Image (cartoon, rainbow, N blue to C red; front, side, top):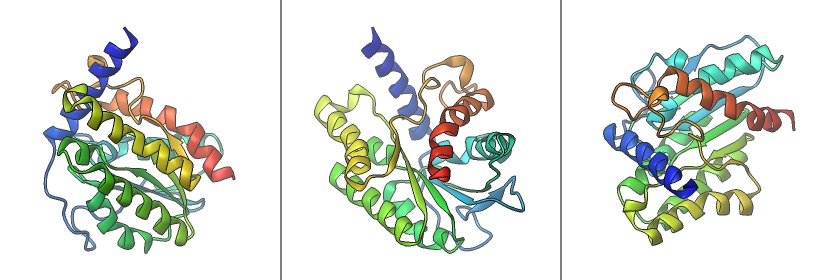
Length: 225
């Protein structure tokens, strides 16, 4: 039963991301894809969120997406942060890597990496996904930023071998590079109709609140190191 629920949940995640796949824009200042400060505070570390539609908060005001909500929750706990939401719908790990150098010019103290689901949905080689994620982590660290890696899953319809190889990338990168890690971004949200938009796929405001709640402990630990 547990495996069946997990399969349903990952299927919803795949559908949600597939629905908003699009070409990743380049990030010159002031255009789509550029980092956007959300609910910033005059003090505290800068935390950049590099991801796709799940980070961007598809079909929701940016203030209701989990990066902004995380900023609010941490501020309530006495840990104010300045949030940069660099989520772009349809982005792949390659797209995120292309945008990273520019994002790092914002001098983030921490980078939360949510990339790779679109790679899997397009059937791209997992070796390339792993190479991109490693480069993202290493570049962010070289720039002086701490990193939190968020894992993703695929539905079983992509084949057991590919799914296993894909899902193994995230813990392997986290373990070998000693990076903070969350196994599944949408734990407790994916596949639950009451936590999705009317399309039944993307997390709604309530879903993003749960994601933010789940991410408070690992992000707090990262910032307090």
